[in-house]
Image (tube, rainbow, N blue to C red; front, side, top):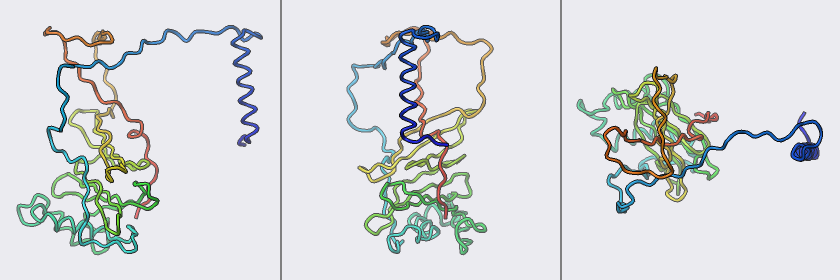
Length: 273
């Protein structure tokens, strides 16, 4: 039986009293016991401080990917009333060189769109089952859609919302997929890695300033059993500051990205079509 609010308060008071009694050595609980030495905290070591900080990106990777979907209406501003097949057909029409013709890389996707009369996920229709969830925080459902780019092994993943009575694509990605998850207001895509026992995990999260889903985490995480070497390597030593060295025996260190709890958390259930 759950504790009531007064019951919870009483339990907290008992816990505090017990802690105080232990601290002053009352009763037969014994004295305080140490938990061992605390590791020394080390801050990040800045490398090459003489370099002038860059003021612009070296490569254009399209961090903000938004586009109004032309030719697709949103009846009553309700994204659930939009036909997902119509959305994919509109994308194919925008890029005929990718989908139409014998030399088009995704020609089989366009060919199998003719089997979508019964809707997504039926027959050979390449449009996958749509999922609906409020990812933008405006209280209305948004649409997550996927379709394979045939004849290859890549799948396109898209997220759409409604702004000013228009359907707007706010996220686009293509990759070989091992899993896709909706977690809160984030979309997590897992993809296989060429390194055995690892996978890539990419997370997009809605950004209200950019009005788009931004790539907020890009990680390489272990999925298989950990292999222990027969002869463990010596533990690296170092101080709080990094010092340059010209020694050939020194191995260059590569700092892996931190693991994101939100990216690896189990995804809550999403509402499907």
